[in-house]
Amino acid sequence: MKQPIIVITGPTASGKTACAVALARRLDGEIISADSMQVYKGMDLLSAQPTLQERGGVPHHLLGVAEPMERFTASAYRTAAKRAVGEIAARGKLPIVCGGTGLYIDALTRPMGFSVEADDALHARLMAAAQEPGGARMLHDRLRSVDPESAQRLHPNDIRRVVRAIEVYEISGIPQSEHMRRDALKQGDYAERIFALRWSREALYACIDARVDDMVQRGLVDEVRSLHMQRERFPTAAQAIGYKEIAAALEGRCDMPSAIDQVKQATRNYAKRQLSWLRRDARTEWVEAEGRTPEAVAEEIAERFAKRKEA
Image (tube, rainbow, N blue to C red; front, side, top):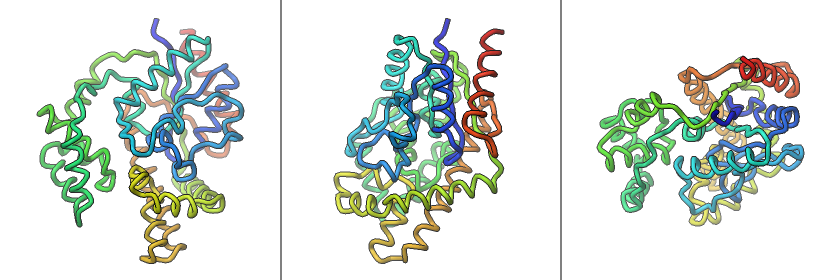
């Protein structure tokens, strides 16, 4: 019998953490984060890492575990998350994965071809090229020439993943999209159930705007200022939504209200990409979340999980 796990996912600001906490309390579970920014230390607000109060006393794993200079790949996430699943299961608890990074979710639940080893020299050259004027667009064009499917999936500003996709092709000679297609035909290690929280576009955008405003009120600008002053030590921060927008205001290239509006728009665009990813995955089970409490959503998920399990 494969180890059962529940994945709570959905677009940013859709209430994943509150739902996962309610579900963990109901099913005696522990939570494993699946967020590519929340794994890093020192970026609590920028990555919207749940506070201790928001965690509600439920153990959370893979939050703030990587150093800011560390390159935390999907392969590294897979190794760490599999270890966490094993430890949680050994305690007789249910592993609940919570997050919106589709690549991390796939890395854990599918036997993905991350055996392609990283080439640090190649990675350094590509990242340096990205810093040149027009570098991000140039790299994205390069990816489109060798792996058009991955280029369509990845935004030009998602430099880390664009670079990794180019690396995979350069090292293996096989496009990353082809690796993913082959892996999708294989059986994974777990009996996963993937539940995605559904909202209307208007309501989701309102949630996004409200969360950005709350992050600003809690000190987002000061956190970005601190990270920007130490940008050589925190290179990963530049990939987080909100960093470059607020940094531009801090450097006087735009005013702060405009920067905050840009953060909201970038977050909405990210939510669209998350939804596109989820819609392509046939395993996704949608759960209405709009206008409902986290406890009500968790109750429905628990009931659906139990019915399938009994069947």
